[in-house]
Image (cartoon, rainbow, N blue to C red; front, top):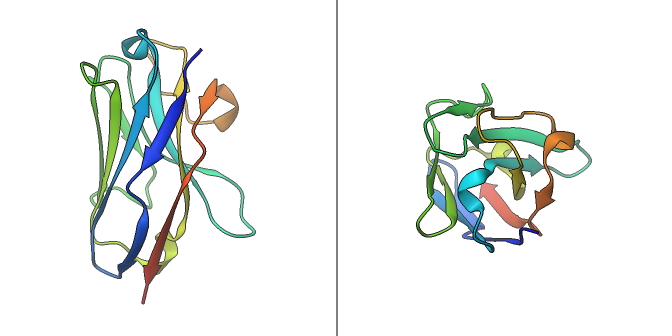
Length: 125
């Protein structure tokens, strides 16, 4: 069982930055690939970024490449999402998720086993 708690969301102007954190419980954090997803109002949840269990593999959605950076600290059981050059279209509830796979980075949300409660990110124009 893994429990995930996100933090760091808020209101920011376009062009600004935010750093999201996701703290995980349990001693097996380093066995899980981690992902960040987002869900805007009246839209489906979408993949934003993912990182492999070791941190050696990373992938991003095309919409955030060059602006967002995912990282993880396995000693601290935490995964981060640094978001720069934010745009109004980045407004959404952001979720972190854990997938019980060591060597891949799943994209479909159905491949993730555990989810946080979400944190709201609002980017004003």
